[in-house]
Length: 297
Image 1 (cartoon, helix red, strand yellow):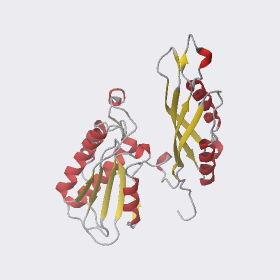
Image 2 (tube, rainbow, N blue to C red; image 1 turned 180 degrees about the vertical axis):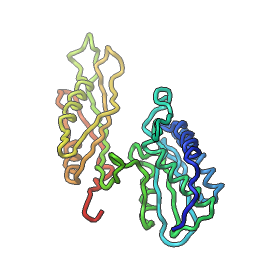
Image 3 (spheres, one colour; image 1 turned 45 degrees about the horizontal axis):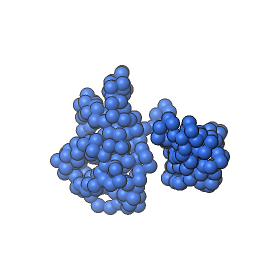
Image 4 (spheres, rainbow, N blue to C red; image 1 turned 120 degrees about the vertical axis):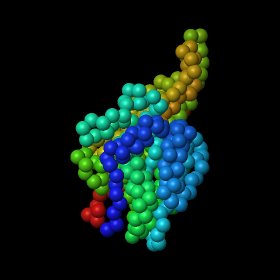
């Protein structure tokens, strides 16, 4: 098998630490693109064929780096965005403790994306031939369901011999052979605004209705079946002395089984208001189907 010189662990940690210290929340495309600039520059210098696809809809760019070769490629797909907001480093600084490095986004998934980046760069720099070409795909929006990169991931995967995902391992370092399906929904509540003092009885609070709905959503959680729902963020109202005419939230749904995903989607989309004078509208659906473990894995 072809092999590259991987380099000193101290050097790799130093470079990884620079990636971690560049905070890249999904919601800040400029921040994500700054790290993408770093990856693009090194991969270009190493000789990769680069395609950079400008971001849209408030997300960063996508980057494709290709190595030479013939035949169906091996695609390695990672993301550079994280769930952590700017300023997280102040309370969760990068540090090394024994044989582990810590910091916001290092687990999901800057360490894995950096590993893939480093491997491709080393192969190119050292002129190591591979049995198949390699396609490295770095995306900006995985943490919110890949709304602007999904088409690209699916396009490259359809042309590949196999796809490697350097996301973190399971508990104890176990290989991940299954994953939950994911659904994303937005609930909007329409109420009736009125003055909270002089016309309290004329109003219908969207916030009160949303509160009922959130409690009902939590009651749908079934840990034994692997069904979980999480509500965040929430919003509503305008000022303390006005009964809220509007409120809303986002809903994250996780399921182990396709049938549960279909049932929960229908259940969520069919929700109705409990508070007289209010109206509930739910939009969304299953974003990713479950990937169940089978005997073929």
